[in-house]
Image (cartoon, rainbow, N blue to C red; front, top):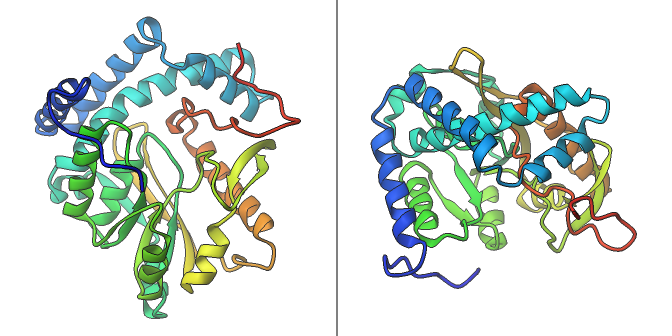
Length: 304
């Protein structure tokens, strides 16, 4: 695990991050419809005035949806910035709003799939993807079923501390991504773990495999983890709907994973995540460099 960074307000950037946390805590008191309106406005302004990683997002969308007309790609990019703005306040809601309020604004389908695995005495990897609604989707599910999470701390120490405190408040266990032995023990004890393996980080068991048909660094450890933990893999997706409410869908156990081929398992996982993204494309983390670090023989698609 990386060395703990100081959260002192004298450290550069910490005072600003602490002020941001105060804004999030205060905003969580507002109605969700207000937060959507404010977030959408902030995203629209950012698209024009502060286009952070716009070229990265544009490249990702072009690679993943090559048949989408250019004008539609542009509209998707704009909607993504709006979704990112809303996502800031969805984060506030996920961390600080009471469970009763979150439960009232969402529909949850497929809880019977969790119950079936629980009755079998096994744990489960709750497989999902990085949407802007990731945090609020997970928190909504927590209002129906307790579970744990696997996570990576943000680089900013104040935000990392607040995120960890929030997750400890609501979840059964909070397991860092480097604590694989703790993860396996938790699964073998019957724990269900929130698990989003779709970001392109080089790890021990990563391979370059198709993601939307494009070679991408892919976590090929999912099947291995399920096998070692004697656990099920249950996909679920939480997303914001056009009317401002939320929907969490839990899908049946993926009984064809793990297999004898970890690469094929990883491709199957990618297919599930691709289907999720197609359901709410504007809510995917297009600002993330999903196709970086692919190694020799692959184009640097993010080069200027």
